Image (cartoon, rainbow, N blue to C red):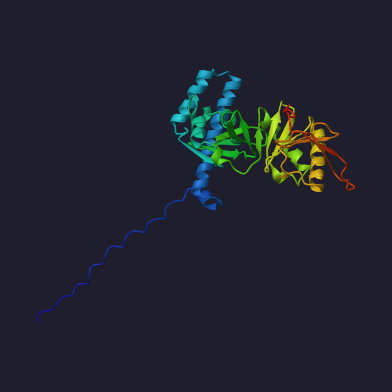
Length: 312
């Protein structure tokens, strides 16, 4: 009899156990820190930049590195990647965005260490009326951040037939056309833009008349003529207090016996003791009595038809 010899199946070799990769101390610290890897990279980048800038400043002050050498080192930092490649602008609504880019890039060098942030800010403030303030900063490695604070238009200024929006400090913002005028006070005449704050204070003393005033002309750089929506002109005296007192008196008279919208074309209150008025087409003067209502003084209104009361 033949015997069948059974062989035991061959054992597969057991692969050796791999040792877990060794985690460095730096990796352990990163895992423990409560910040993202991206944020850590930014911190490291800023730290390197700060150390380099501090080193340049110390070297320049201690051993007197010539300006050309310091510039060469800064250019080297720029070539290493610390160079302006992007500009991010926020807060912009009415100002010229392309002009902001042009002012920011108007540099002798775009190497980050050589960017003069304050010079960029001053240039933006000087060249664009819309810009009230600007905050300029770096975001390493390659971005300039510019946040714009814009002025708000507060009035329209008409001078020599041209219209412009102005801010509350009289700064001209931009030219506009007559068919694009917003609902803002209209100031007319040379220098009227610088009197905008005083004009608003004047109107505040007579709130009943304020919505009825269409425009104000600054005459001779010393006083106002007010033009009402109904077409009349009121000449006020010189001086802020004197003009306010005259306007209050006119508002009281108009409240007692309406004057606006009654056919008059001009009122003159430059003389504090009387109101002179004029109607078109009349030849003789006409005295109009105003009843005394207790708080309104009795006043004579003289109507003049020939000649003018003057604009000065």
